[in-house]
Image (cartoon, rainbow, N blue to C red; front, side, top):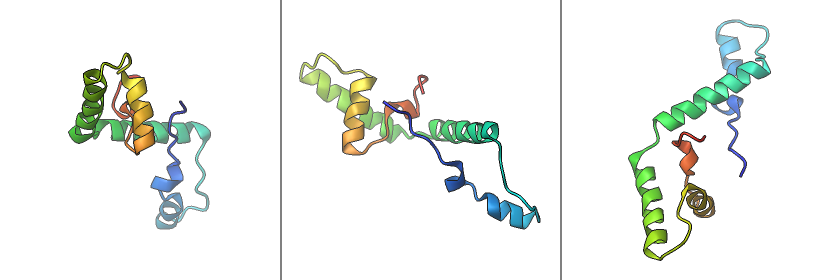
Length: 95
């Protein structure tokens, strides 16, 4: 599955920064865009709620209780995508 991208300009108003600091241009490099995306992902990961982890574990327990062969993060992520929850990659080390 494709990892969610974070459009930096959706979260950071570079034009407002330019206006506030009287800058003529507000461009950032691709490398800076990647770094901003990394920071946003790290922020989300750091602040992932226990409620979300509990929801993931509740899904896992349902799968286990129903003798499903698969109950790892991949299947939980697939279920989360269908029901509109954040995936486990929001806080897991694999993200």
